[in-house]
Image 1 (cartoon, rainbow, N blue to C red):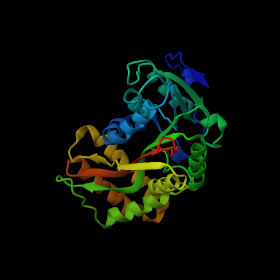
Image 2: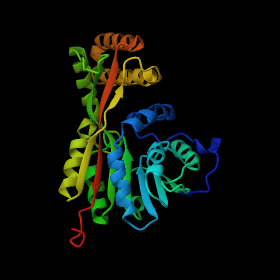
Image 3: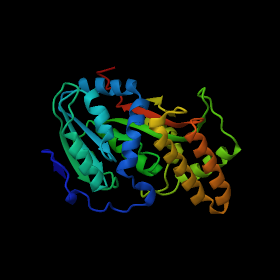
Image 4: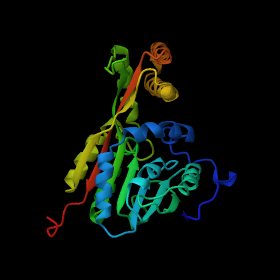
Length: 309
């Protein structure tokens, strides 16, 4: 575990990442490519409510980011939350952690003050004292489709015992599709077939048991309410408009990813899946199609005490 002072990452900061499963390893290029779209899709209302909750408590505000990657969640939240802030960034990939630590040096909290940041290279299991002790707000972004129901249940129950708030953003709901120039869905039967294969593939074990995939938002909402939390959700879909050139590389990566998952699920359908991929990529290139991907943000606040009600 390391704390600021923050300095430039060196070659020594980039050993090979631990191999959980191929599906659980993410490249810096993918994370960088989606960051702007994530930021414009997220719920500012829920972020504001999380800021209000922290502001009602004495600082410093201690925030945990699970599966932090290169630190995009930190970069979005830090200037929108009150200070002083102490962040603990958790990821199993030391290379991604090095990037997050390096970029955190430039960040300031909502009051313009520097952050205190520590990083920890470890798996997300077990959910133990080292993971959750001395934390006010547990945050995670684009994580819960990868975890199992049992892992999520243990996390939420453990946070509830500590009366910690939770802000879980950009959990995919399994739905995606193509858009025409008017922003209307225009899925056909081949899209439906690929999407069904992809949704089934999402449920494969990513290292923490059978993954929730697109069921994550509904499961999280149920688990949070079961422990008495005040849970509020907001739909936060990605929208990549037709002809949005700066988002074309991301759009093509999405189609390639859907194709790869579908092919892995149904290798006997390779010819059909290749034709689908080539057709949709060509239409994206011509600016005829956009893409939408469903996500949900969730803020969960501890139950009010009798004195506060």
